[in-house]
Length: 323
Image (cartoon, rainbow, N blue to C red; front, side, top):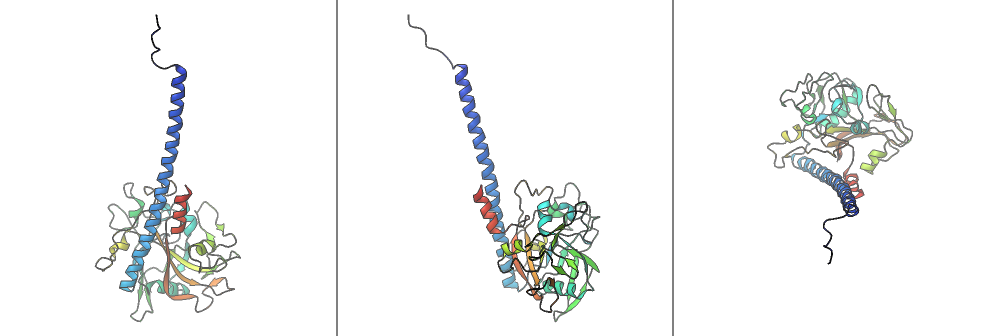
C-alpha cells in the first residue's frame, strides 16, 4: 500500500519560514523608520518655505514685519530655568545668547531701533522664575494667554518716535538670542560682548568658536562671508506672530511646529521655526560690530527662516534624500 502523504511542516521548514519573516520584518521596520525621518525632513523644508514666504509677503504689503516674536534668551541671559529650559541642546548650540544688553548703551539702542524700524518691537521674554505647568507645551510657554502659565516678566518693548528715532525700552537690561559669529580669528564683539561663543548651560563651560565661526551664517546666506563678523538676532516664530497680523490682507494663519522625533520633542522642547534678522556687520578687517558708524543697519533685514536645529531649507531637503 502507498504510504499516506506527509502532513504539516518539518521543524526545519518552520525555522526557515520564521527566519525569513523575521528578516522581512526588520527590513520593513528600517524602511518605515527611514520613511518617517524623510517625511519629517520634507515637512520641515515645506514649513521653512511657507513661513519665510508668509513673513515676506506680509512685509511687502504692510511695509513692516509682524511685531511680536519669541525671545529665546531669558530676560537676564541666565542659562537655567525660564525660556532656556525649553530649548533642546541643538537649539542652544546654534542660537546662543547675549547677556548684558543695556538700553542706555548707544549701540544697543541702534540695534533695537534697526529692528523696530521694520516693525519688530515686542519680544515675548521669560525670567528664570517663569513656571511652566506640566500640561502646557513649551511652544505655549511664551504666550501669556496660555492657561496656567505664570509669566513674571513683561515683554521687552521698544518704542520709537514718529521720526524713527529712539524713544524708550521698557527694560533697563536684557538679553537677546544672537547667532554666534566670529570670523577666521574666532573673535567678534558687539558692545563688549563676544559673539564668537556658544552658550550651553551654567554647568557647562563656554565653548569658544572654532575658526570660521561665521560658516553657519555663510551657509545660510552666501552674502555673510565666513571670515566676517555679523550681528544676527534669532527670533522665535511663536503663536503671537500670526495674532499680530489679523486684519491684514496677507494675515499669517498659524505658526508651524518642527519636530524630527529625536532631537526636538515638542512635548519637552521649544519647537517653533526661527527667523534670523541681520542687524549689522563689521567692516572688512574689523572684529567689532559697531566700531564704524555704518555697521548697524538703519533697517534690519530678514536673512532667513530656519528650523529649531538651525537648518535652512537646503539642509532639510538634503536630510530627506540622505535617508
